[in-house]
Amino acid sequence: MTESQARLETKIKTTSLNFYYGAVQALFDVSIDVPAGQVTALIGPSGCGKSTYLRTLNRMNDIIDGTRVEGQVLIDGKNIYSHDTDVVLLRKRIGMVFQKSTPFPKSIFDNIAFGPRIHGVRKRAELNDIVERSLKRSALWDEVKDRMNENAMGLSGGQQQRLCIARALAVDPEILLMDEPASALDPRSTAKVEDLIAELRGSYTIVIVTHNMQQASRVSDYTAFFFEGRIIEFDTTQVIFTHPEEKQTEDYITGRFG
Image 1 (cartoon, rainbow, N blue to C red):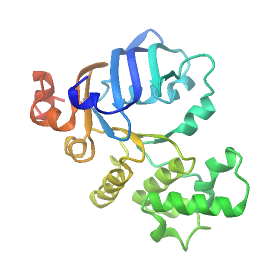
Image 2: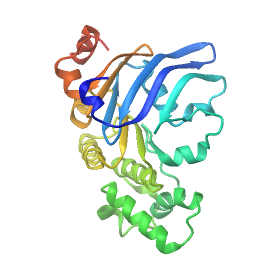
Image 3: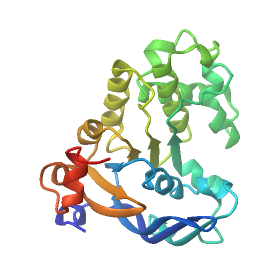
Image 4: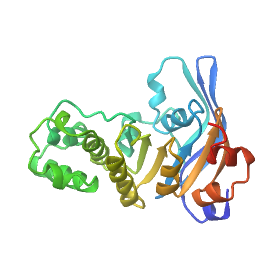
């Protein structure tokens, strides 16, 4: 842990994390302390374990048959792989946004209200407040406030992705996981998503997978470089992009491989 990390509270701590798809090992002894309220980027070439690691943080890999986890993932000091973990409540605390926007074929309002309803919110006034607050947090409110009953599938790609971010925020999570959230978007929509990440910094602990080095350097406070299922280097984004300790990190950042 660097001196700068030591000054920050750790929200997510992974210790000696190994992950297997059947007999194939995808993560090797991964140990990272993800700081609270910061944006942490996961970078590395395709197939290096970034998305697999991201999905261990909310147990999304559980739905894949034959997977196995060794080691620990601690959130606020509690191991989320312990037998007494309520996975539904865990995923309420940890929102996730995928590479491809995944709006439900429902109205804009019902997309955002879906999660709160699952967790027992029934009063229309309360749902109205949650939907408005979530859309404002995702910088989408002004664009859709007069279209709440329209099908969300009619939104543009960039709007759909911000809707999915709003849907994740609607259950009031502490952590937001983002798996290449802008890779399918045009430059203008990508800029809006990046601006949104900057606005959410501090209110949420954000972990983002990205192939885009410029994006990682723009949006993140910390960066982890993965290669072949291992952590090669983890430090502040400034250090990783200007003075990395490992030559392999420098070679990847400068485009010599990847």
